[in-house]
Length: 277
Image (cartoon, rainbow, N blue to C red; front, side, top):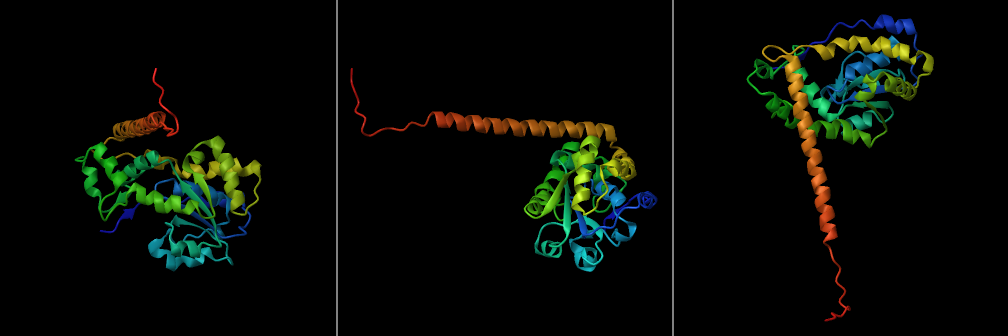
């Protein structure tokens, strides 16, 4: 069964026209790990890019990369977006392209992934997770370790979609910075400079606010019955906090043990005679 993702109607073109953005001077690719705020960053940056330079043929991923190489053409300087993991093909095709990499805190990413698969927005091979038979703890474990042949593990996703790209010439952006208005103003200004534009600080915040409201409703979608979203979210966040505390406790214990072992190391001098009283 092929997965289907429902999206809301797009209404941002009028806002883009109102700002009359300057043309891009370089091709730009917005890369991200899924469920990290991809559409939020894209909608904000659309306020900085002329409509004619916004590549809208497809959301670019590995299976359709070969069909959309025009998105990276230096002659057209498109802004395109997608989820591309790091391997030989994407690294070669994007060598001359300016790249922004969006990622988010893994603890929050697990919750976002769980909400997505339980929402009406997603339709695919995971419908059986929506009937309430699986516990929240087990659901989050599936989001972390993956589901065989269907959902990759968190480790696999972050390793190829984030960590590997960080060694390349990407401009990293944290989702948390986008959600904090004060930090987002500086972050978007930096992103705008990377993309080759020249808007100025005076209108950055205005464009930021124009692009962000399109995604406000997405985070508040309710879980299908019988999973009530506030209960699930509260339980899930508690579950993640407990795991985090346990991880930190294990790290402290290892540091303490290593310190104790170092204190017990003695260096015997073979030339020192033993003196008896």
